[in-house]
Image (tube, rainbow, N blue to C red; front, side, top):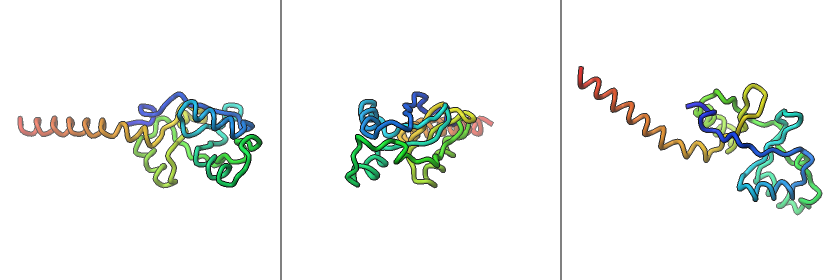
Length: 142
């Protein structure tokens, strides 16, 4: 299964100058765990709930003056839309992350999360079971 078949193509983005308070409000309003940061349509960062909690709230910093660019992850791990879901799982596991921006070449086209993958897992198992049953029926018929 390919990433583009599973990803969410509605990605909320924000400019790097966005205040953390405003980023948190957007994430709360839309019930999402991250914002992708673009500059001139190029992926330059990602900020997550964990970033906000660990890099602002826990330190007692003021979210009304701290900007996304001050805390965002800039070495963003991403994946191409025509890569496999298995590769996405490998990247998430290797880098201990739950969200991957999805690119088509250099352009942001979506995001895939651990939750997205968990939801499709039963569908993948069902498809494999059906495939195995078909193969067994063919072997029995021969």
